[in-house]
Length: 140
Image 1: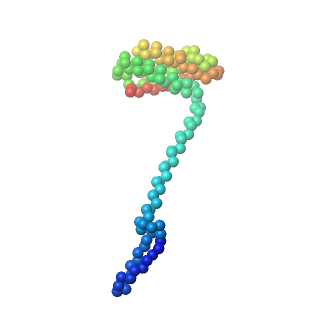
Image 2: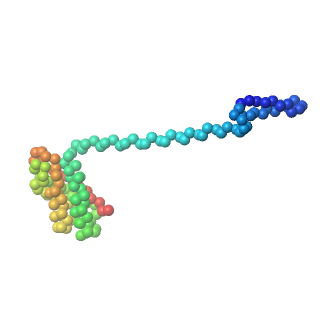
Image 3: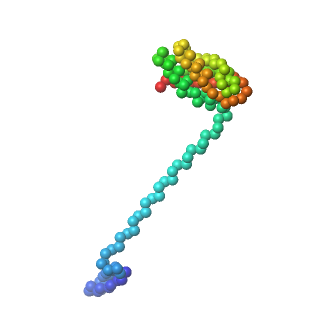
């Protein structure tokens, strides 16, 4: 920029600046930079494989077991939180026998449903074994 000094009397100095490009317009400030977007959160770690594949097989069957609990609640609306312990004899990855222990009374239709759901569970292959797993249900 070029400066021009003008004497305005009694020792007063006035400085006038003009743009070198002409027009005398003040230059516009550079636009402010937008702050950087925050980094996306880190993806959750992949859950470690379960140390109990038999429990995982029963957990995978929870929706069909839950349907049986819901059937029991329809027959007895007072049925609250309950645990059903499944005692299963597994041979070659398939359930050979099902025994059920209820901490609350289920009607016969719900018991038959639970037994069928237990028979449908597929387990990892391996030696014949007994699998005993409690499954707890809560009213929705």
